[in-house]
View 1 (cartoon, rainbow, N blue to C red):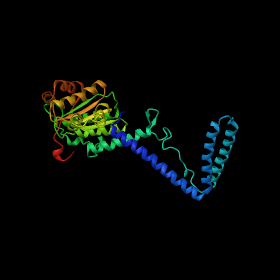
View 2 (view 1 turned 45 degrees about the vertical axis):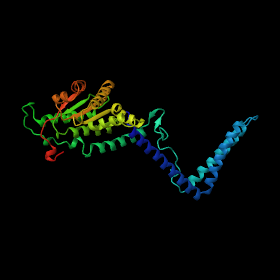
View 3 (view 1 turned 135 degrees about the vertical axis):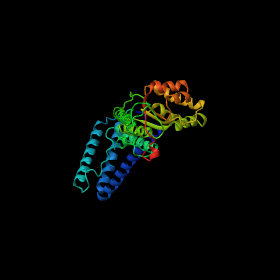
View 4 (view 1 turned 120 degrees about the vertical axis):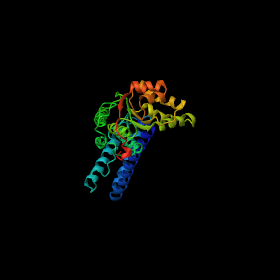
Length: 328
């Protein structure tokens, strides 16, 4: 579940802040305990000194350090026992001087070996949800908020189905897609006129899939092209390269409003790179567009059109423009 560099950086920063806050709290509690029970400070200093004595005895040349180390350890145990007696007899809460790490699994580092720990993964999920909220917009993108009664129940003669019946099917399909999502899920092409809920349903999927711990990148086609242009024609940096990797490496990429971007040789190349790279890697995408099949063929290269129409599963949207009715 590769998260973008920005999300990972923010999550690591939050983990580091949590570690620092815990350490600051422990130090403040320790100083308070020293004031109330001065003997604790004396014991802690003595314990630090015994550790130094053990190290010195271990490296003392020409002597057997065994007896010295044993004596120092005995002294150390006695000091620790006295410390416990003082704390047990004090009026301090049992966890007042708790200095255990914020995560027992990884010690607060965020990783167990080279594997991301659950504590850091949860922070990544939180940061991703914040990012999705800022990109998607309204914050209402939940399947339960999708209103089927906004779609006409009359039969569309072109497709021989009512928009409401079709959208009921689409809603269930999107729910099942989100609940059963995996990196082997198929790619979807949302196609239909403006204002029919394509962005809303793709946002519902994004939130649901992200809530399940998968990495999701949601952006418009215009922003995707802009990021590739910034890397190509601006100052190429490691940061810009990492910014592009989010499009090809995330578990689910959602590209909204395909067809609103300016068509140039460069934009076609960038789109082809993203689509083809993810197809070869077997990673799913969701693309929403106001274009129909003919519009896709006329606007894009045969390579892009064949991949969108031949590899993606088509989800057709029908109905009247909901935005004009002030509904979505």
